[in-house]
Length: 191
Image (cartoon, rainbow, N blue to C red; front, top):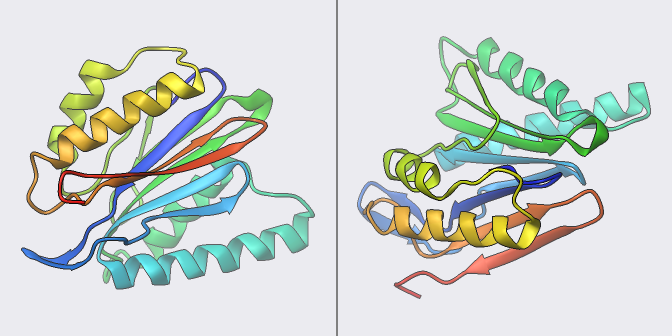
């Protein structure tokens, strides 16, 4: 979800196989660099493999270009990497969030073969996406400051995962501004 020159990216902490919970502290959000974050919902092994390939490609870009990727460029990289595997796809739904030129927030999500969905307010992915859409649509306001954005994202996430038996166990939220990155762990009902 985007705010005024900031963005928040959040996920639940449950790792499961269908209805069986394997772990309650699973990390789905990864930092690519200080201004770009990646969230990967879906099959955990595919998410880890995809993340490793993306970090490798980003490091090659840094060596060649001597700078970090812009969020739009990183989204194109993710899309191209997913499309390469379209006949045997990674079972992941990436969410990319970053601060671009002039600290303008950028968010996008895509399906497992790299079809991008760009948005100016919020994007969702994963098993609780239907309830997340409803919660985000009802709670989103334009130009929120970082603290208000954190509260809004946290409430949307926790209220949505409570309505989905395949999600939950609290949340993990990053709020990114041009000057800092705040990371917070949310306690769920079951904690």
